[in-house]
Amino acid sequence: MKRIAFNENLFQQMFKEKQSYVERCLHDSFARIKGYPPIIHEAMHYALFNGGKRIRPILVLEGARLAGGKPEDVVLTACAVEMIHCYSLVHDDLPAMDNDDFRRGKPTCHKVYGDAVAILTGDALLTAAFELMACNAEVPGIMPQNVARAIAEVAEAAGSRGMIGGQVIDLGTEGKKIDYATLKTMHRLKTGELFKASLKAGAILQGMPEDKLQCLEDYAYNFGLAFQITDDILDVKGDQNITGKPIGSDEKNRRTTYVSLFGIEKAWDMAEERIEECIDSLRDFGEEAEFLRQLACFVLYRNY
Amino acid sequence: MKRIAFNENLFQQMFKEKQSYVERCLHDSFARIKGYPPIIHEAMHYALFNGGKRIRPILVLEGARLAGGKPEDVVLTACAVEMIHCYSLVHDDLPAMDNDDFRRGKPTCHKVYGDAVAILTGDALLTAAFELMACNAEVPGIMPQNVARAIAEVAEAAGSRGMIGGQVIDLGTEGKKIDYATLKTMHRLKTGELFKASLKAGAILQGMPEDKLQCLEDYAYNFGLAFQITDDILDVKGDQNITGKPIGSDEKNRRTTYVSLFGIEKAWDMAEERIEECIDSLRDFGEEAEFLRQLACFVLYRNY
Figure (spheres, rainbow over the protein chains, first blue to last red):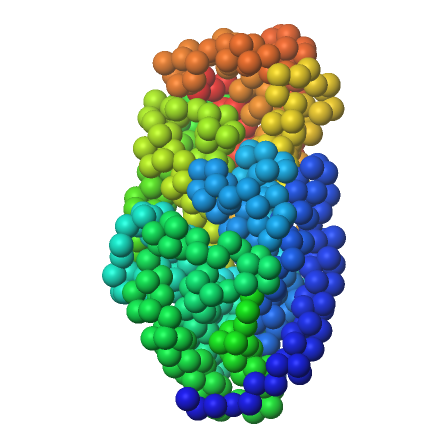
């Protein structure tokens, strides 16, 4: 593997700083969209401030940085992609979908507010995401045509040909064995596309040229694959106290995973290859890309 | 009442032409967003082509016309607001919400595709709406900053402080008596805001100045109120074969309506007053506003 030094302490420090920044931005953005009636905004708040890792908004900010722009100028879009991620979790957890009572150790939105309000909470977070992205056009220095392009990019990634499409494939193949091609497509749509759109959206807003956008697309594609493979590995050998998820749930639910198809060792090699590709895709970027390189390594070595 | 001649035959002819135009545009727009996997796009198609009156997209087109622009240049946004309307119907009909098996004589989306796919179908229509609106920025002559503003306007109207908020109030007051102020707020949020945003979005895209936008806002506000009042009247004295809805359902469900609060005659007077306000708000617009004047009269005299 084309190794780069993974400085875990330094990475964790940078990651925590970025997470805290996103958390503050999410509070500010949420203040823009909250109002009457109170109950729906309370439920949106519950779903949004749920202890998430905030990877997608951090990708938006890093995309802007690599384009040579100020990350602060794209925070509304960063918050928007996190709202989209959170809405998808609220809807996924519903009784009609995965029927989960807990997420990260807390009762899911519909357990607290009921199914009807949970459906509307997801809808409202999704709608708020696009309101915030549109408001990004008011930031001086951000060109409105880039805002429109970023919105189209994120909507396509989150919609029926992206995240929702992946969810539909997942539902339709539940309990069935699927082949590698289907598994790969499902995960690319379900998680990869929104990672890609997040990183690209920040860069698009700051006017990155096409050839460089392609490099970010390569990074995000491989990042998404590696993320899923290590997710499957963590389901087998993770520590429930750290991951917050019950171990062995994939096998219990007879889910096809990278581990069930290839075994742990081969799956690990595949994840390593993907991370190598991630690092390689950033070759034309200098110091500014260091966090993204370390983030890729983190995906490989993470225990949560 | 400040009467204007309602030429029903002429209106119906114009209305049908506009509906057919919107229908063709919806097919074209849908072709842009459909793809893999097939099942979700089939369900989206089912929910979208459902025999709706297409009032909201027509308002977008008329807003553009009043701004002196070509309605053809805002069709993507027109289609988008109809997708938002249709997504709201799919989610409203779910077992966790109104639990309706039929809509306009056809089985509801979740009866055909199941609850999980129906939830995702609503999500996908909502997401596609914003993708289409963002793509409106590619139309020559449409300024990207106006696209961003129109998206913010529509998102606010459809979101937690608008349509979804109204739905939450409706859910929270089910079976309870509510006062006039709550009734009015609920309907303004639930239907009025999206009417308003539709008419304004078309005008914003075509660069209408603020003072004139205020006139459109007044029209839409009163239009929405009159629409709801006549809806309540039709529930009492409409013809089920024409409205497509069971008569007397409001009373059966002990819903507070304009009729239950004021009686039919007074409710009718209130609707007339609102339509008078609609006509008055268009006083600075000439011939181009004739369809909107006739549309206001139609709301009063409609039997479906």
